[in-house]
Image (cartoon, rainbow, N blue to C red; front, side):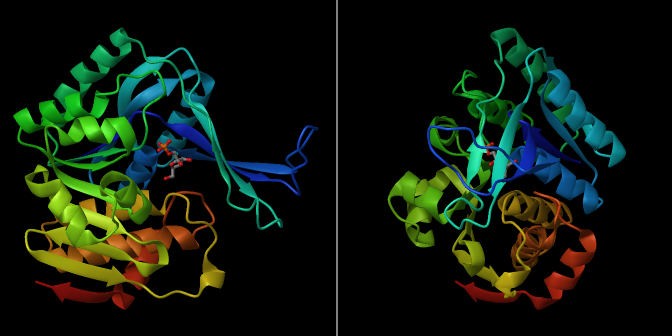
Length: 307
Ligand SMILES: O=P(O)(O)OC[C@@]1(O)O[C@H](CO)[C@@H](O)[C@@H]1O
């Protein structure tokens, strides 16, 4: 079983807007809503790939209720803690204005009290016993404990479960103090962490804290480092086919987890990651992928292995 942790779920919205005039009223012309938050995307992709999986999160108010209804209609298993305050909304602007198009606006998310956090730790402990891998992705609501991921990782390590982490800032800094199995960063996040987006520099910086490094470079694909091996995986698609890249990193994490869980080779892990990340870009549903696209794309992955 693969567990996906989503501390800050959202309703992700495509928001159509013609232009933006400062200091006055601006109206969206249309909104389309999707279940979101990085860990939610990972869980949706794993369910689409028919992996035995479950998402644990903090579900708040009527927005949280709506996200859970989406899980029910897609046969995604979920658990976690109920909050009174609503989960956030995240907006991706869609506009003919290239300066606005694909701009993201993210709410901070609801308050998580110490009591909520302790209840989450308790459920995490129970659920993670059955997990082979745990994915932990995305931000925490702004007032949540800054060492949230570190404390979950410590529990997972006590149970011998491998964690793949995709986060930034203080949460990442805290998590690195204890180390964990795998990390997923994009090139900008790598640069912010260690001053370089070069995979070898990142590997050197992380040292023995992390075993598997997935570094993504947008259309330039994925670099996967494990021990002394570095694998590059890339899929060439016509840029005109790309609907949105929001959630591609999350789908890529799900592809990596799919392959690791099936005990595939390192090359196959990279190929599944690249195929799932790319499949998301072709899908009109924000942050989601279709298994049929993944199965088609996986045959087109270009792999380079460097020792
Ligand atoms: O605030 P976070 O959790 O870091 O990122 C949130 C977010 O940008 O990530 C997902 C796409 O990866 C979207 O669901 C959401 O809009």
